[in-house]
Image: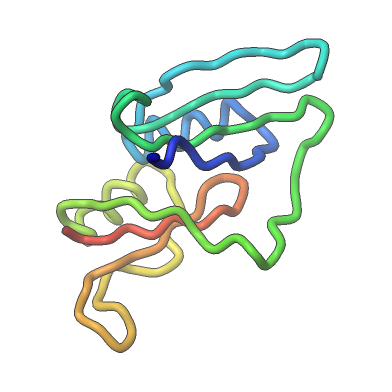
Amino acid sequence: MRLLHTMIRVGDLDRSIGFYTEVLGMRLLRRKDYPEGRFTLAFVGYGDESENAVIELTHNWDTAAYELGSGFGHLAVEVEDAYQACDAIREKGGQVVREAGPMKHGTTVIAFVKDPDGYMIELIQR
């Protein structure tokens, strides 16, 4: 068994694809419209789905925004340098909500950014 993808619902698919590809450096792996169901699925990630877990962005055409709820925590992405990653994300218009630094009660360097729909993404320094 292996993890295939995590699905999140997004209000503006093009904006979300732009964030994950242009700001976080992922690739758009595939995208398909389902007109009868009035939704589109787009898959983004750092590598081919046959070898890597990816993110499924689900856009329901009649829904512009979602309440995130309290059950979902965050996605995590490993980075070489969390400080540089925060600078690069900010330069590309991304929102850093917790600057890079050691985690509370530990030494691992982490940071948090927020995607356009409000989902949190943890950056964990290698």
